[in-house]
Image (cartoon, rainbow, N blue to C red; front, top):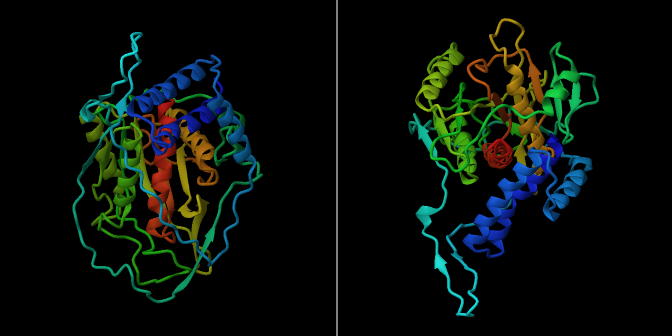
Length: 406
């Protein structure tokens, strides 16, 4: 099975319906395009050639993007996002074939409630006002530097099919990881199901971000909040909705596992995960969504940043745990296969957005089920708007990756 071919074909095909909507395509044409995406994935994953100009174009585009130089981000000169057009999807009409008697062409509307739908189930999200002023200038306590992380030629870094990288901090060989990255995880995703396929939780739910893009931080402005509009719940909601918009049903849980007590957070999130998996056995993928904390010895803070479509996006990092013999994770390589698939797809669709995958001796509740990963979006020096934008981009590439497993 050729992972790079799957990545290129699905990455291009997944964008086709949105492009067709912009050009005024009918609902019938959109449904045909969606079916064509699924057929392409099936042909390619089975190793059967699928002749398509879309695939050829995707392969050439992927090659060009993979060799493109990552953008250079000037420190202390943030790029402010610009307003993006809003695409509203409406039901269109279907044009049936004209009968041989040359009767006038007619159209028949497709009832909206008959079209396939994915959904988001949001639970345990409690409104709270943290009382903070998110517009104040505050005190300039230290510098924030925006940096882009693209990998390394060091021996502990391996390069995947897309050009994205993995940092191997274990005794597992690089060759073993490269071989595993060429395989798909043993997961089966049901597209447009009403039952959730993905669980998004937050072990450190109250982690939060800078109030806006700036070149300094205020030490008095907290980097944690119980307000779901400003902590990891807000980021998780965008990721969940983007997945659903692309055919993947999601359960998003907003339980505060790190408040009022931080110690024992992973024990409490394990209880949440197990309870949800028991209630929703349809779930195949568990994402524990966090943000990082990055600082230098002089107290300055680092905001990992990429420029995507002219906008600042907080770089994300996938952490895939390896069992050191004490974690009870005999199938940890299945998690890594999923990590490699997500990393490859992100690089194919949004080059430079992902930091290298961290493969290390970590548990993070990844022993509970295969398909479990921890993902960190940005750091405490990134602005919330950068993290929200990344959640949208990650949702697009994650949906395309999971479609390969349908």
